[in-house]
Amino acid sequence: MNYLPRIPLPIVLGGVVAGMVLYACGSDGPGFGPGGNSHDETWIPGQDDTAVDTGPEDTARDTGPEDTAVDSVVEDTYVEDTSPPYSGEGYERGDVAYNLVAPDQGDGTWRLYQHAGNPVVLVFGYAQSYTFQEICGFISTLQDEFGSYNLTTAVMLFSDETGSEVDRSDAGNWATVYGLDTVLYDPDLDIRGTWATATEVKTFLIDGDMVIDWTNGESTSEEQLRQQIGDLVY
Image (tube, rainbow, N blue to C red; front, side, top):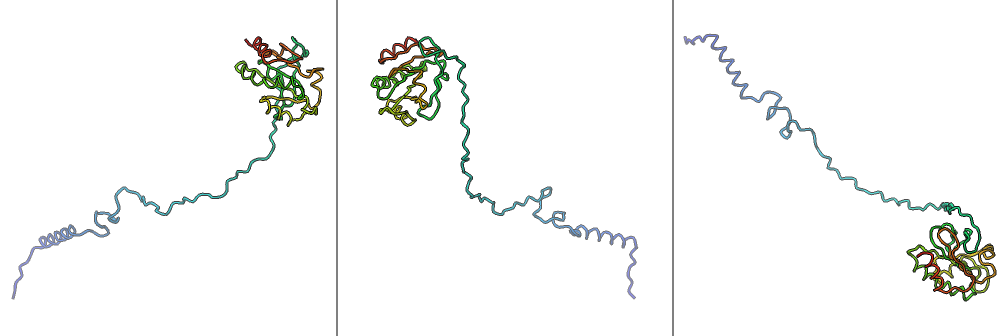
């Protein structure tokens, strides 16, 4: 009869416990993958999900036609008359001139008093007059010559070459032919009876206070008018 040595119970229990410890150390443990966590190997601790949408960007442009229509409503271009409140006295030398108001070749309205503070040359006449034509021929020269003194010049045309009433186109043609900045006309036929009565041409030189400094109802030469302007501004 074989005899198996009796191993004490404490030793047997100690071996069992030791074996279980060794098994646990050699195993990954249930529910955990490599690295000791439940995530896959590509996950970095502390990093949120930063996946980028790689879909194509919407770069389509609105190709609809732009609204370029112009507002056709006519703007009110009325300009208030801000002329200084001078009291006209007359049309002779030493008088405060009345405020001459007349249409010009540009379809605007010219006002004498709006040029207050500057010397003004006014010439009134008829297109058939050689004297008037001669004066109109050198007015632009004097305006350029005294430009630093802000000399203003204006010509009033009472009739065209045929003696007929003047309209805006006639005034425009006269301005073009003689190189003039301002050509006025008298559609109501009421200016000639006050500013140039009974003469075919009349020239006025008016100072900055709207006082008539000099006037001539006959032929005026370029040198004569240059001298009068010079005496006023120098």
